[in-house]
Length: 529
Image 1 (cartoon, rainbow, N blue to C red):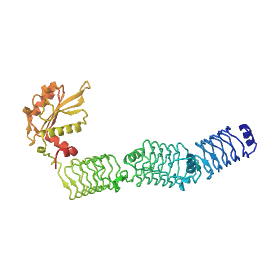
Image 2: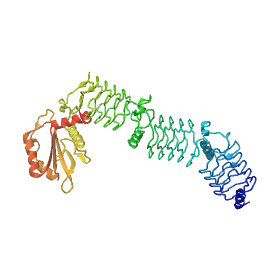
Image 3: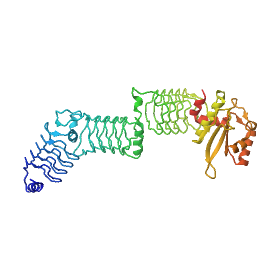
């Protein structure tokens, strides 16, 4: 029987075609729903996009057939041979197979996923379930649409599975274990992933739009290029810091942004295995750290600029040289914390508790502590910012000047010329800052003069400036001293500027010490308490 004859009989009302030899037949897009094809030979047949709903295919030979896009919902496939069959995008919802069905492992897993059979069995299947081809124990499925029915894979064991580009839109995945799986490109939009384990999972390029991630473990997951629009996370969600920030940016105006979310992107801080020194010098700028418990950690040299640390607990925490510029510290607890050389400029300290905290060497210029508790705290006043210049030698002072200039002007082209007292032609530091009228970078020469007792520096100690600038083709001169610049040197430099058009920059100990008060991280590298 050929295809035309079979179709004509079916359209005339015939449904019984069992036992026919239809090998290699072309039945693309044909409606054979509810037909009896029991014991039929359909080897290598083209049944792509055919309607085989409720069709009896028991004992049928479908090996090598093309069933891509076919509707096999509620079809009977007991003891059918489906080896090497293409079931891409086929609807297997409700399809019935038994222990004698011959089915490639991949499609058997698809059948189990579509029919939510992983609630009972995990992916480490045995041959007891069906007559399967040889396979490894890891689930490997790519590019399959699993949205034919209400997918319920709650509490399923799918760790280490390879599920690239699967469509799980709207699926029930509560408590499902996807740890260390590959879900790259997978559509999880509107999926319910409450309390699911996605730790170590590759989710790159996945769609998590409007997915519920409440209580989900995403620690160590790869979320590159993931769509997090409208995704829901809560105080029990475990998510790495950078991905939390990405979620927050994407959902900055979303109704799903939970304002009282306690930032748990640093949840590893609370684990027993946490290395208490691993966050030294970390950049936590703009982090959301509401109510986070950071008791006793070493966060020295860390950056909290613009971070929201309201009600965070920093009791006994090492915050030496930490930068809280413009941070929200309302209600934060700094009891017994080490805040020496910390930066608090612009921080909101209303209600902050600094009981017995070490606040020495902090620049409090413009900082309002009137509504903070500072009982028992250790202070040095802003006026007492002097440096012990006798702790430095000439070479160390030049290195300090180098660091100051680089930080002050954000320089990228700056060089220290040799060691102090070397033949440097009057050049201690050479840098480029600004441009001339021809938009050419301006070359500067800096000379560094250490005065351990803060004595004055006069014009007689800074000679031949003009000749040196001409020889070096420089248009800028900078003098840096730990002493006072006296009137004779001021006049000499002013004349150099007015007569020769040379740009001039002057640093006495006053300017240097005030700058270091605002940059305690630099000061701490050169001076002991």
